[in-house]
Image (cartoon, rainbow, N blue to C red):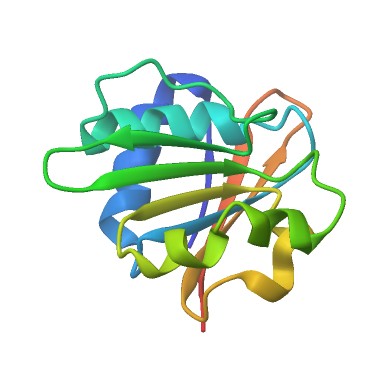
Length: 137
């Protein structure tokens, strides 16, 4: 699924992503500043997160409570190797059957779960964004 959108359409796009994802693990690919965290904030809001959502750039993972489950937001931009991700218990997070939103998944490619949803974001010259979403098996 591919969609081009403006920031004003972000709530609609977030709803579309949640409705059409076959998994609870979403992998966000895109350059710095493309809007990965902005989209994740809107997705978390749609899922019912009440807390202020921020990028876990330094903490690597933030945990948010939902009604009956959790949302884990990972940012692997600053890690040096996959061992650092293993040290935080990444496999346990993925096996928990909670929502997992992963920024910079290419840094932990060998540790990603078998089934996930890849979301590639690009920024267009006019300021809009293009989202390309596809299941990964």
